[in-house]
Length: 288
Image (cartoon, rainbow, N blue to C red; front, side):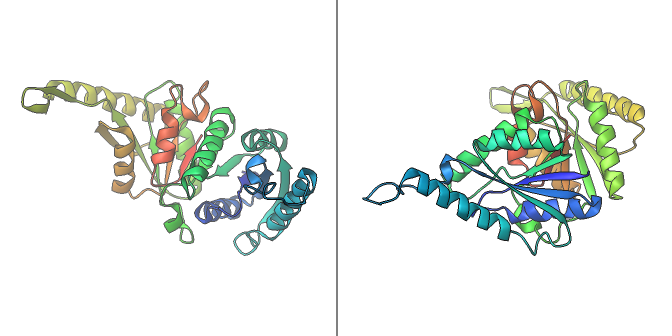
């Protein structure tokens, strides 16, 4: 992992994500490319209203000047000892992030999908979704509780989500390599469709249906592990994917969730469900 692209947005920098990226960079002796994209949303609201004697060109120059100052001074203690290159670009954030990743041939994009305030979350979520959809390289996203993991972050337990698609063996193999890099324990989790059915008096579970679905998943994962050369613990749940992945992460005390990158939907999956997993995860997600 020679290059990590770390896009930031002032003043809403996710410190949890920064510490996670710094942890990875120190472990792999990576260069961090700290990227800030000046976009139309960077301009302060109402700056050209109320009789201000400032032209659009002057305003843009001031915005870029302040952005460069913020970037030059940002995260000096947090990234101490790491080779950091600071890059300021102008344009659409998602497009510039993707283009920079390709031009620089980065090995990982580390970015947040969460922010403070409804508008910020909307804008950031849109950027993250576009990057996740279009990016060909692995993407690391900080989890919902990332602030609590800021300084003490470490990788001791890795959880790999297995969907039994044709890409699953590759996902398991790469998750195993990642876990081995840190001497971490690997666990696999698969969430089947719900085994509940509804009728008079409420919902109930058909034991034959549950046994068939869980039995099939158990055999498939055993086959995948044999092909991948792994012997990880296996967790099989049925029902709500997002909720149960978080439950499995808590149960296995996992520090990072690994999911597969499946074209043509990119890191989001063909139906976009991958973004829900990434946004709802309580721990960082590495999409390979």
